[in-house]
Length: 86
Image (cartoon, rainbow, N blue to C red; front, side, top):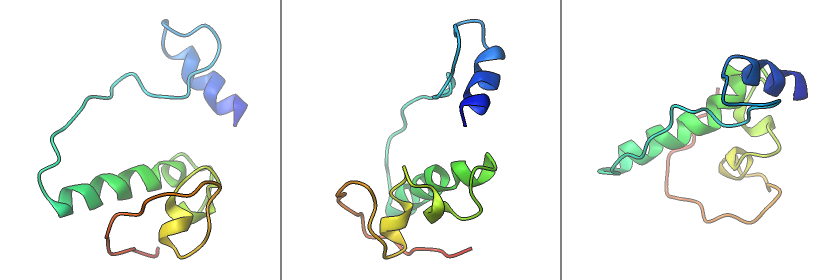
């Protein structure tokens, strides 16, 4: 994973060595339950899109495992959502 962070940092001159977060984030108003579910699904699927894991719940640093009826690394407050299995 360190190589992925180093490669990401190379693309942005603001970084000296590694980049973990994107620089393109911005806040959005949460206006519905569907919107919350969409954003949660997007966050959970980021490690899948990056090729780190095959399923969201396999990424150990994600709350996705909690939504798949497992136990994550920390205790979370789950929001009411319909969990999707891929």
